[in-house]
Amino acid sequence: MKITREKIYQKFENKQPIVCLTSYTEPIAKIADKFADIILVGDSVGPVLYGYESTKQVGMELMLNHSSAVAKNIKKSFVVVDMPFGTYEKSRSKALKNVKLILSKSGADAVKLEGGEEISRNISFLTKNKINVVGHLGMLPQSLDGNYKVFGRKPIEKKKILKDLKILENAGVMAIVLECTIESLVKEVLKKANVPIIGIGATVECDGQILVAEDLLGLNEFKPKFLKKYSNLRKIINDSFLKFSKDVKERKYPQKKYYYK
Ligand code: KIV
Image (cartoon, rainbow, N blue to C red; front, side):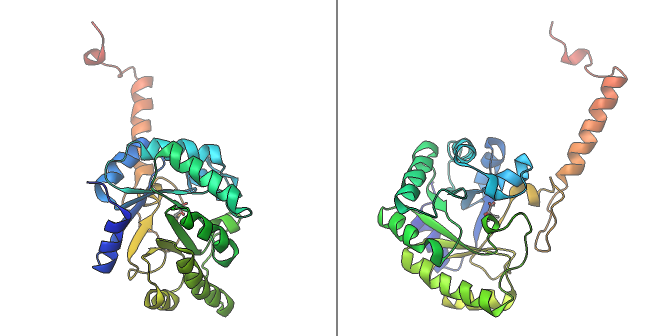
């Protein structure tokens, strides 16, 4: 049965952890769908799959393609799509137009936007137009150029996160991703929050956790402190390619059983 916004709230109210995973492609999405409450088509697709330096380089076309590939193959999970940098910040009518395009083409359930006060008027406009919006506070990859670092240690950063939390709630977000911030601040956020807080590098106490699928699978060399690698896909792929190349060079593949008669 499809997970709805209401189901996510039920989990939040019952203090049941919300499981979130990213997916960019059909094969990963189909597996993630078995285990996740929320699947995020993150703009991390740029750095992770295309080798971009930052998520800033990701555009509408890329997100349209990947969100469609994912959402069309999901049976159960609630699908959230990242709005690309430059598509939602300036004008609220442009934000609504781009959001509607992504949601209608992909069939996803919600969008995620990075930032607080700066974009809150646009978020309010989207939620008033019945769009499910997930906020994103803490470290904001779209504001950086690939130099990711903890956000929230400085008093000014801490103040901003706590202020933005209330601003985003008032703007009508259904949940907030909190990325790469310090334990004491997470505690304060959780005490004050009225919407689910989904953590990434933000302690075990959050209402849910999200990791980029390729990061937890060990497909790349990205290794921030918060990341637990549950697998070593890089090694598995390396060993498989090594075996294939050896077989080809020694004329051991394909054997007769792989022939057409
Ligand atoms: O783009 C992304 O994958 C994200 C997650 C890291 C939360 O925003």
